[in-house]
Image (cartoon, rainbow, N blue to C red; front, side):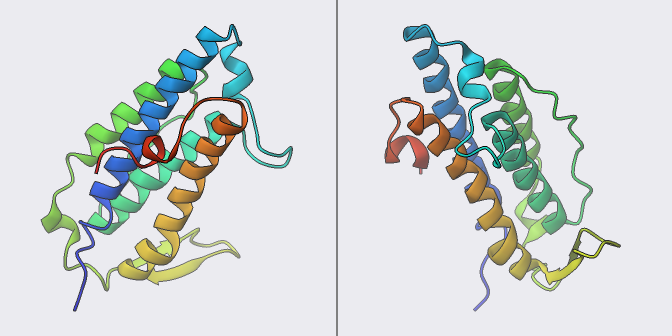
Length: 169
């Protein structure tokens, strides 16, 4: 039995990006309530060799739009990754959710065997079929960056829990 690539991708990305937007709203409110400079949260990291919160959000968005686009056989939109504020991140998420809403199940379902190449022409080039790309690469990468964003905020005192992480489902 095959799975619906659409059902296991686009709606999942939408749910988690919407939850991420809500978590960022809580983070901004937390910073204001505690008189914390927003950059203290936006530039926070879990460890010095990890990306800061802003970059974690940008990468999560990149995976949501990139994976969905590749599954649909279309070129993903290019974003400039210039976000610096909570408002910028909210706009980035909103733009990505609007883009994901344009992708239809018929563009993605039935494409399990579509060949997807990551990092073509480099020593890190990998060739996947679409189902393996989604389940073994795309979703784990996306969830890593969503989870890391959540962990950075939680570590810095923002009162978020599992319900916040999961969002509406």
